[in-house]
Amino acid sequence: MKGGAGYAGGARRVAMATAVVVALLVLGVALDQGLLGRAGSATRGWVSGVRAGAPSSAAPTGAGASPVSPAPSATTTAPALDVPAAPRIVADHLTFGAPRKAETAAYAARHYGTRTSRLRPTMIVLHYSESDTYSSVRSLFEADLPNRGEEPGTCAHFVVDQDGTIHELVPPTLVCRHTVGLNHVAIGIEFVQSSRGHDPRWATQQVLARRAQAAAGVALVEHLQRRFAISDDKVIGHAMANQANEFRDLEGWRNDHVDWQAPEVGAFRRLLTQAP
Image 1 (cartoon, rainbow, N blue to C red):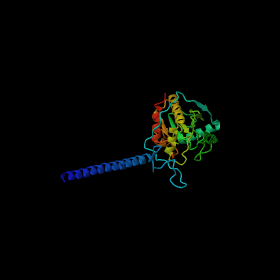
Image 2: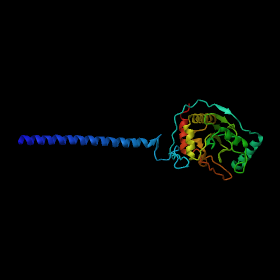
Image 3: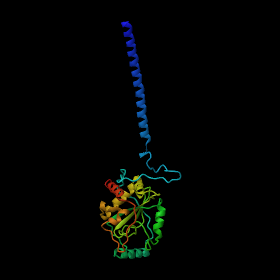
Image 4: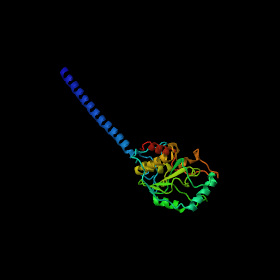
């Protein structure tokens, strides 16, 4: 009987061992499936760098809802660019004869105390057009319509189109009305871009991400900096105008524009260091 008991005990031990192995195999499969499930969820939770559930410009938040962009970060990065050594500038000058020069000189006298249409630039102000075509931007500036009840109309010295074409609308030695408080010292550059209902910083970030347009803008600014001895810290955004040391307006006017804020200007200045 001792031999029989030993055999039975051995059989039970084999059965238990087999059960343990099977249990471990089942557990392993469950764990593997669980891990794979979690990994799959994590992978599906990110699409093109945007976390699932976070607002995305590619996915409406509800029926008929407008796309919502992620909130811009506190800092902005821009891609490395192949910046040309010299910009190609296309002259497409506005009508800026004696009447508009007289309007400009009168405006300068009222706001800056200097009756002249001549400009000796010490700053550059960046803008975006709130329009997606160069032709619409030029048409607005050509019209010379009163703005805020005063002549001359608004304008910019240069417009950088989305394909990288740089248009010179006004020579940078003439005052052009583009930034309250700084028109008497600053060159104005418009980048063709509309906000399309998004945060203003989103619009500027589209410009920085568009390689042809950003590279052309950097080349243009570098060219103007060399020509007029303008330092990087004097390249500012329209949203930064009120804080500039050079800001002046005898009528007490202030800027209410929010295009080209400090984080995006910081990214643009970093791009200037890449220029040849």
